[in-house]
Length: 347
Image (cartoon, rainbow, N blue to C red):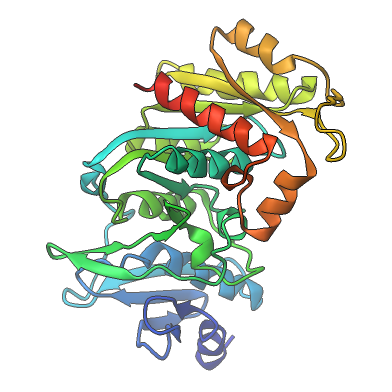
């Protein structure tokens, strides 16, 4: 492709913090050399740098550029930046507890539990934040009714921090706020890891009792980097009762107990524990099996902190951006009970 054609592709990469202008218009494209694009950043790190690097690479791939390379230079120094980005934990110094909400597999409702637990903790009077660490499939914007919103950047003590969105008494942060709806985030592992760390370590969290980290499913390099570089205190594991989910949960628990990670597991949440029809709220149908979570908790030597029923209102509330924990139905009571036991567990 010609340089002109490459630049046209890059006009699709917009900077959410600069009035949604594209990176070509902002003069951020330093040079184009075949499939290699060099982006220019100021000496003071842009809080959305990793997102822009990933979005640039994704735009090139979608445009048909094979094996594109995206590098960066610092404007004042006109020299390549060091590989990787350095972060510190200063923005977390007033956060009492940082807890990962994890599962060994997808589809168990981990994000649903994380979002509703955050809202339930806020209802109980705690100061809560939630970081959506699923950089490939962020769902928090949809589940909280914050899609289309974009956090602002604020300079504090010479450092730019992203200001999280606030709704339902919770501070929310997700890479989904910086990607267009339906946009696939085509990132390699190190790039995704850096973007994730930015979503946690370059955010103005302020004073919090709990910061929940909604972790992606699995046990890959993103999980290991997160646990090694972010002071995650421990984990809350989410599962469903059926055997296939329990087998993967056991692997997820083993990751936290690995000697190289060694984080405590504060408890297990059995999601979709039973089905209760809306017209018969006192009936329970164990369609995924009965007491699978209780048996797994006993086998792993951890506490079963909560059992969440499978009711249609939880799905409808999530799709509508109004978490079920905000209501008064039995599903809300289940999340409030979980929040109370979780807070007591962490003291």
